[in-house]
Length: 168
Image 1 (cartoon, helix red, strand yellow):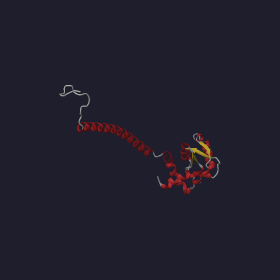
Image 2 (cartoon, rainbow, N blue to C red):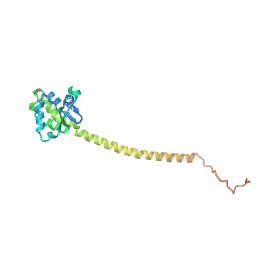
Image 3 (cartoon, rainbow, N blue to C red):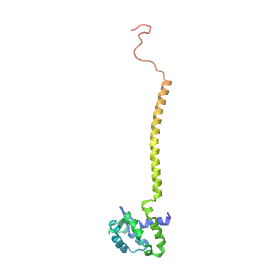
Image 4 (cartoon, rainbow, N blue to C red):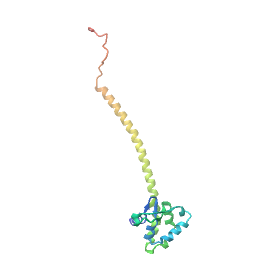
């Protein structure tokens, strides 16, 4: 993904918990925020995806502003007609529409690669555990074998009664 688009994402996607504010995107692409709120409220899917949150750090006040959850935000971006975006930003907006899902949810190929790597790691950890046990057993057997070879066993205990000599 282009660094310019990545910078645009960073400027336009401001989150508060699981919700994303629509105002930064509208301001950046010079879209009428109030009209977009009306469109969102009238959309049968988006009508269940919005909320109002405040962010004093972003906006400088605690006034609740319109926001959408991730699913709603992606849908909303896709239904915006690029012709309502300022002409000089239109091309960037079309690219934004193309990459918004990957930005919020991660690229599908990356997800598959991560899943494969995680699966391989788990398999290797399992093999490592099995090999670790085999190494400990082999080390113990080697230690026992070396002890028997280099140490003499002398019989201690009851004296042999058949032995010659005086008994006490």
